Length: 465
Image (cartoon, rainbow, N blue to C red; front, side, top):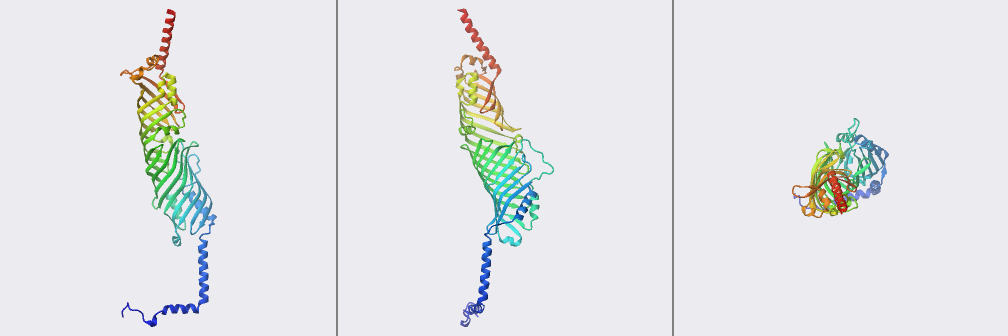
């Protein structure tokens, strides 16, 4: 028989007639069955969109957080919509120590998941989204020794608590939307991150791994420096966070950086940081000094070695170079003009102003500042701390062409240089807004002596007449 031949005519429509006859004989019970089944499925479908809360689930999640990494945890409400996901409202997680711990508050946490794996006792989470989270990290100025009962961030602890669940848990991705982070030291914010967005793939097996991208609208450091439009690749592997290809805008210039941080101990493993073409005029304006102008461009590099993330423990080195610098009427210049009676110092230019940088013991040391300018060159060495205070020992050398324009008493009071130029030494300290200037006492004594000599000469001429 040819398998591709048409069936006999007497079999054509046979199965359709059988089904039709069966339905005709059982029409009423079948309609009732279909109606009940359809209504039941519709109720299930509608119920999947109806939100409901469960206080026992809230308590279970709070218990998990406390046993894994937090000393306290509270959740106002957990709302479940089976087809749409889970929503956690007013989540608050914190450590007990408000001086060296953390606080996390999240108005809303949204969780979406796959339905089918639930039938096999597996919670397959598609995404965890933290909406408008606020994180406060308290960093002590002096590193704190770990206490015996302190709970470190631990993958093993987190995995052990998840394994106690009646369901296995798989998480595919985690995201943060419009987050904010404050780093606090001595009850003051020294770093603020706002408009933070993060999207990461999540994996938890032998280690905790999150990989993705992050961005933030603004990062404000020490209440002054503002980094905008930051973008970076982000990797967290076993609580070691790595930022790579980090780029941002900084006062019309650019930042390129990469770093690695141990989140369990708040330790900086490494940092590479580069500044290019930063506008000094906008940078000086941001410092809110109020007086004077400073124009030019700043370029620099900085390398940080392994150290705790507290100001007094940071350690590193680098170099800063400023070009085409023009300063007018800065507070420091005005003090120098008053003390040395040289009005021309109100307006100074430097073709290049540079120094090496050494960061240690809470200060940025500047061992070899060198400025090539007009009407003088400058050499200095000293330090600047993270609170804006500084101390520099300076040596200024005037151009030969400029010396002739100085008042005779001033010129005679300055130090003589081997090449015929004149110089002075001074110590500059305080803040950029309120600097203190101490001119070398030898120059002051010499100036006083020269004034007295001139007075004596004047008196001699007067009485000689």
